[in-house]
Image (cartoon, rainbow, N blue to C red; front, side, top):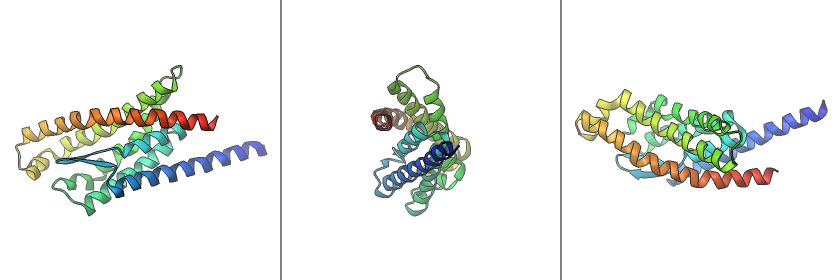
Length: 195
């Protein structure tokens, strides 16, 4: 009975430590600008990477909490460093919900391949988590703010739709590749340390 309590307690402490460490990395990436790559009129991001790592190593709840920090920071940055389209990320539906879902989708993608190598599982989780962010953020921009987005950029609505699709392709593919390149070795190293 006592052993079970100690194991449960250690697991809780480890999860809290992971949330703290990866959330801190997310905040540092955001504050230093290293987590955002400016591709006008939006910013590509690598801030989703700590979310995916947290989800893989500690589960969907940890990943979702780190995603919450990512989303809150997106709102903070939209407020403190405005661009013509910053209004988009003042909406929690766009700034927070997709980022929370990164942790959930990447965890379950990782668990979908139980008999595969850790590298393949991590690569799938990285791709799914990254695409969750890209597709949901851009999809919600299209659904909720297409006309306002077009007006902010002084372009037609049809061109705005093409721009959103273009951003999805030009940002989404590199973000997936970068995520895989970082997440696979990091999670592999963490798993070796834990054995």
